[in-house]
Length: 101
Image (cartoon, rainbow, N blue to C red; front, side, top):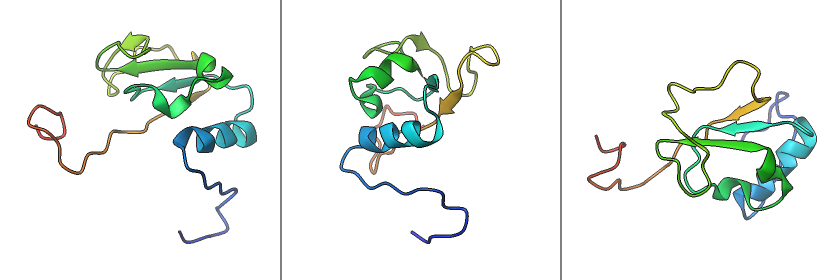
């Protein structure tokens, strides 16, 4: 990673939720979030931060509250403070994944 004057903070962790918790604490304390690529919700862990997240994904499962495509988010302006887009990444998509289509 190249460090520039635009870098405000850096956190290394073993789990994505450790990084997310630190970003929330430093940059968005007390904020509400929309995770528009929810997946299984593992990004948020199972702590109090997860209670402030509205999950959206193509199917409402694994704790996701709203079935929606991330290209057409059905939330009114100002419904949440921060939108998080963490698209799935697959090295070898299966025949049925959107990435393959």
